[in-house]
Image (cartoon, rainbow, N blue to C red):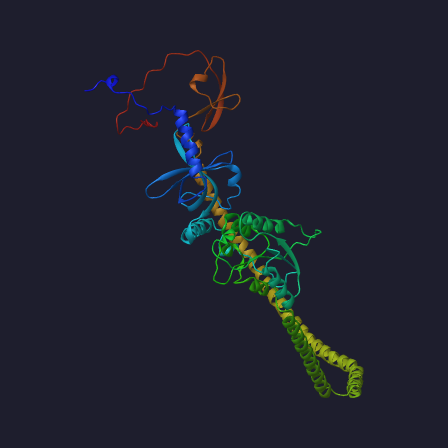
Length: 481
């Protein structure tokens, strides 16, 4: 191993880092002061200051790029990730990080294939938002009073539209001049559509009834302004019906999907906007002639019908004469009708009176017979009444006597007949042994009368009588127990 200090001295000059970085910066900027780089945008970022930061890459390398705010406003397109572009600018280095980058001054899409891919991606995005739905489209007015045209004022498009409108139906046209391609064209077209919609009804400038956005034919790049989102969204948001007439019949832009009606050419847009005045005049004239002929035929048919009805009607004098005859006949019949009616009613009255008299006689005879029968029955009843009354009184007497005997059998006097007595106080109430007080005055009722007694002191009970032998009779009543 060789010692470093033992190596021979070198004559290679020494540089500081700043000197090397400055030399590289000058070399790169002088060598690549203007370059065109093709690549795919990646990592795109728009800073709050307005600067654009992104990278350009291909299959083998990546290069940082920046677009300063002043240049970004003039790009004429909105960069996006995945977009293949051709960037024009210069290369420079960034000594603070030992990096190099491209300062982009212009940018354009790389090839028609990339444009078509971007166009298809944008179409799908806007369609997903519903901007192309058929339900949002409005009907084109039949005869607009004012037509607003958004196009270039110097091209052949406005002359073709005005010429076709003058041939078909002269109308009041308002032109909003715009750029139809290049930087800022999309913003001008969108502003024109919004400006027409912002016009008030009845203002100094008439508000259009119909808008036509028109441009002549061209390449995809030439028509790209009408594919920008700002234009498509302005067309979809328009409250005024809009006809798009961009390019030739084979050209298709995104504004065609958002508009209410697509015209293949600007001239065709003018034809769709208004009808042919001469055809309308002929149609109105034809309708007027048909209306006049219809009225004439109607009047003639009604005249013939009235004449036919008039022939079928009788003469007024004959009608009046027949009415007079009927009136005289009714008057004569009315004069005779009252006496005849009175006679018929008198006859009916006589019949009713005769029937009533006969019925009354029959009723009187029947009533007399009934009275006679009732008198006879009454006489017979009066003859039977004494005998029936005697029998009734006799039966009632017998019943009363039997009832009296029955009641007498229940009387307490029957008990007195058997040797019992009833003791009452001076008030006539039946007393008990517990009521006996010395000196009390009682009355004792026997079967053959009553007597007064005075209650004295209590004495010993008398001895019980000796029982009698059976079969002996001493004339007294035996015991009940």
